[in-house]
Image (cartoon, rainbow, N blue to C red; front, side):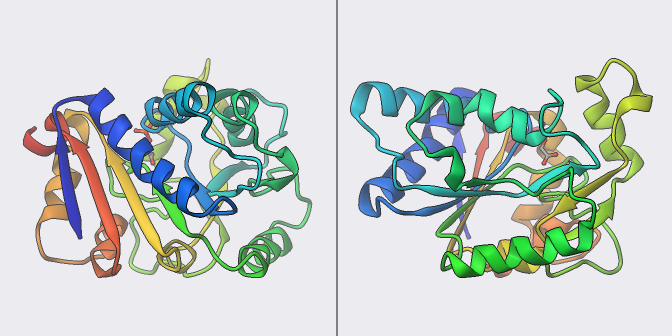
Length: 240
Ligand code: PGA
């Protein structure tokens, strides 16, 4: 595990973007694993700038997102498909047919999840996976539990996550209570994993990442077993 501590959010975002830029410049047809949430927005802005000003080319890139609310329409402005279009895909030269997000409109969620993992495997696996982190240590929507799932699956969101996500909705009652998410195994199969953590409210969970233990009560701690895992955090997350 490699730890990079940055002065502030923008520096963290730039460091993350540089790692993805290197990957894309070295392998034009890279398979990227992408994430939603407020944390990666700054990194996406840097990637957009690199595309517009420095010719970073996404034309051969394929992407797989970590998760999606369930059920939710793809045109709902709170869906993760909508978020990705708005925050990244609409501003770079990626072919949207090569961007995959679990389908929150699928009638058979289990089949959708099974086919999602199969598709990742068909494409040869994820080269580099971006992650945010929940203040409870969730990655994707793998919430703290005694038992975690290896594969993409449908899951219930914890009250803590529902509360955290309610800031994006008019009413907490509108926050979806379920999601489709890559499992811990799907994430751990990525060749490189990059986790961004920003802000004092992530300090406790970042501290747990810096300690040596692994527990399913804090799912992100499992990443310590990944052979190429990079934690990039700002000072607020690192120092509290
Ligand atoms: P955030 O969410 O980036 O909005 O803090 C991260 C997460 O819940 O994974």
